[in-house]
Image 1: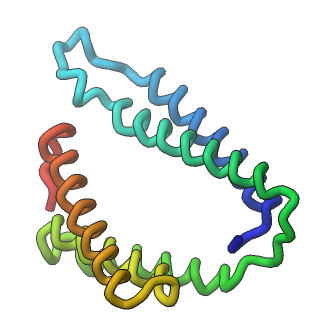
Image 2: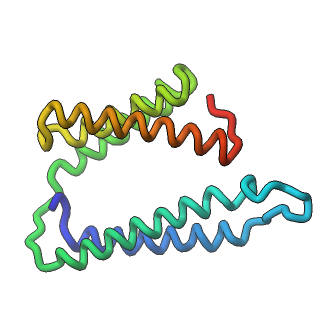
Length: 156
């Protein structure tokens, strides 16, 4: 394991509570039915979906941390370096790619680099490239379609 079961337990509880709070608050947002607004463009829809995802991931991490509670957990390996790498990649995506190249390409490049960076040394080079490329293409296409066709958001 890359982190201690106790840290996973604490973070999973925080993530689950935060996700549930997001769901509650998004439910309380106006639905604008009285104005005849399409339900897919209601202001609470996207936060509600994100809250559901956060709650689900928090619950999954909670189950994992409870299952591994008896395992010996040392300090996280390279925690600060991995955090810096993740933040750097996010910054490159937000400042360097989005708005400068088509959104689908920017997202694909970001996902490819992120997967490759965090899987380096764990997979063979061929499998790493294939996995990163497939995830990048699928994510770029699905995110673009979701925002443009479902949420009706024009992407840069």
